Image (cartoon, rainbow, N blue to C red; front, top):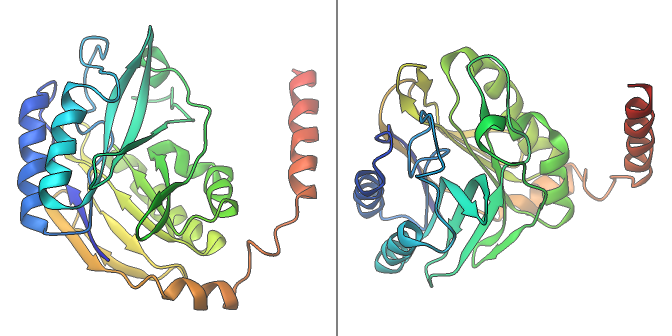
Length: 268
């Protein structure tokens, strides 16, 4: 399975230009799966997503569906999704046959330079998506620091976890320290795709990680480029035999966590 993770700088508010950028990279990569960063359709740095957000399917997603069909590939990218009067920070998976799946970001950062709760509603679904290569679980940026999401995917049989991101330089070490752990603790391939550029210095560093936590390929920092690799999904079997973390996961721990969370809420 040939994978390409595109670290690029989308044009703020210019959806047509960003779709053109996507099309160019997809055609160039000749890959089975091409992944772009968080909110790539519109760019991350917008003061108002209400006019940029679209339904799924919608005008922009329909254009990307045609690109997926033309290139016979899967495409993952981020966009602001509008449903009724709500807007979500959504990761979209487009299939070669035109089918679409979506994941709405669960954890919205509201600290430092981030004000996502000002623009978006929280997601509340965690579903794996079937592809001809295996099951895929999607997450977005800050979600990576909440291991319950990846564990939920792994318990549903995920083979590949994909995190799309808009992470600034100040967060780089945090992301690099946890992404390999997410692969190992769930015995899944883990793909991390970040933006580059802008005033907040998105650092790139796209990374493909194997199910044993080994880095297969990694992009340079602060440089537009495509990180490509042919992954061998047969590696999953050996990794899961060596480290059967999903088989050994105990449901009781989640019951205990719920009790602790409820007790913490009552205290506050």
